[in-house]
Image (tube, one colour):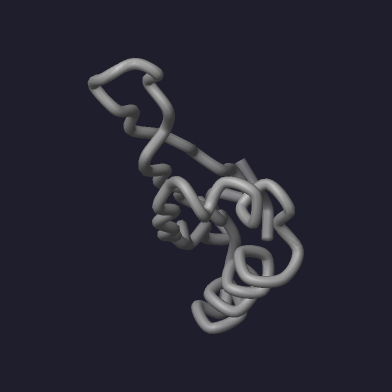
Length: 79
């Protein structure tokens, strides 16, 4: 892995109080020969076991996660 980034967006209710009702969390992993299963397993473990924020928010807001794996060639790494 050469880079890892997380992008988060959310949706809020129209009515006041404008509480969040949905979050989308996108994990972006850059590297060579990244295992899709390893990324999916790590995200699942984080979501279901270790993320205290998710555990706090989940009763009132839907959390949707996704990921993108960006394969970085050796040529790009050398630049």
